[in-house]
Amino acid sequence: MKPIIETIEIPIKKVNPILREFKSFAVRGNVLDLAVGVIIGTAFGKVVDSLVKDVLMPPLSILTGNIDLSNRFINLTRGHYQTLQEAQDHHAPVITYGVFLDTIVTFLIVAFAIFVLVRLINKLHHKPAPPPAPA
Image (tube, rainbow, N blue to C red; front, top):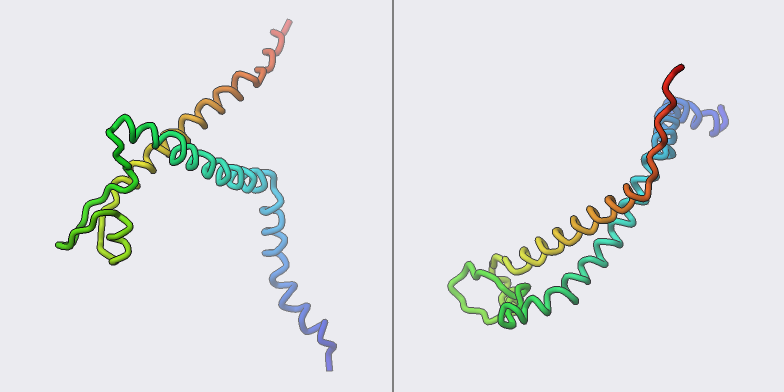
């Protein structure tokens, strides 16, 4: 009878090229850079979301007559609900266009912040001097 290790090695040898290929893919610099970018992007998104909800939207609601956009909705039933929370508690189908508007504002702020950041990084990057002309 063969030892258990020898019987397990046969399927592992068949999978080994796939594992080697996956390992070379996973440790490439691009994949690690992408992972770091996703993590930082997630954290940055939370900061911007808080900026929009907690800093920008309250003054905007004062300018628009104390209208809280995040509580704006269209009721798709015949029932009448005073607030979005009340409609959601009754499981009423609603179109929450106020939340959508908040999301658009958040997106525009994120896009602008990334634009400013990339522009700043490009200005800080020194372009290499052109090679000297051949004699």
